[in-house]
Length: 274
Length: 315
Image (tube, rainbow over all chains, first blue to last red; front, side):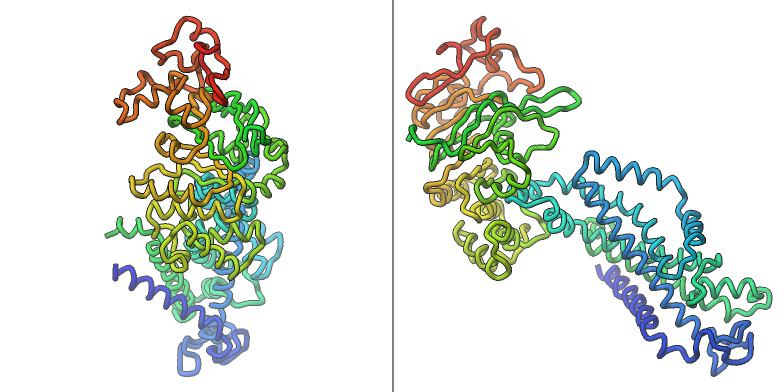
């Protein structure tokens, strides 16, 4: 299916560009994102291609540096979430019985608590920096992931090849790592991409609500500053719009990439969407 | 040969699976011995407890299964070993060729790597050595171009080739006892013949429990044959004696149902393993059953040299 393939490469390309910007932020950004670089609230010109904010900081530089924070939040959060979800799901589904029961009942309790408000409270409680926020998001997100992985592992755990591997004298740890894990990896990959997308948006939401790490620039805090200090009322579009567009494109690209990736690894979906 | 110590001895093995409908009595006081170097065929229809017996020997039944009795392997009771000790026996001492060839190989791992696994687990070979051993094993089970096929995934293998790969897997550590669970099931006549030939070729000196419902295959490979019905051994003895002059009505029925012997089916169907008939378990279907058969449960009694049957007529 060429159409799907094109979307796969375009979205991958967009994500790649974002990653490159984050990686080379110091080289790309013309100014220090925290420095006073001109007159405040200046519209775009040759030196400040996206103008300046109320503190006379260069918005383009802040946007570039903000990519870093957003990607770190998204990918680190997703990595933690997926690792936890995969580990928990495999253990729960493979052992079954009481282990499974204990993990599932714990999850039932956790899932009755709305996760975003819980995240807000935890964030205030721990006064976290960007890494702590990523860990908290990853932990809460991973709890949801456990169920998804577990449902796959339940059928894998009783598969003939697992019985066969036991019959070769392999232990449980070995079977989980070498036989169950590779079978759920495609699902884990898809989950990772969608989690990353989700956590980036959540991270920006936290920043917007004032829970961002004050030591780093992130898009959520940029939008918050713009809305609270008159960006909208004064019609200063260059202050508000760029971080909004940046997050929209990134989020779209990741979602698109996730769907295309899901198609690639699941032949049944390809047939269904012809 | 009868004076030799048996390699494996099953004594009074009773296996039950608790279900919502009641306890499924999959095996009932099974006594069986496998002598060094012999192939014992375990005959019986689907659901008669053949596979359960094989899996019980390897202790691979679900954890909630109720198992009673003893399984003595070289004098050690496998049922009282720890899981760790059992892992050292599985694959190295006792190996199994599972029955579902289509699903018994991990679809996301290369066949060679899966065979190398067995070698790595028990023989301590790693990397290239383990790979080379896997290729040698594939060659031994007559896979064409083993070096190339070792790098393929299971979906590239045909049914017969998968059967061979599973046999290679089981042979990886030269086990002294092999359980083969219906290795000829679902294969065409030519492939079946080849697999049977392969079995007689790879197993000199090895004890084999050959689980099958294929009487012809049993006759080809086995020295002795045990017939199972509804979780019990109803007849056991030398292959010639059992297949040429069967004693138990069920064995007779099985043989009479062969195409070349008239294809007369046994009336009725196997009993539910939850609510077994009183008395002889075959009595509801037995043409010779008398009143006593419905009340008393017969024991295995000697009916000839090394030949036992579970029938009132010989009590």
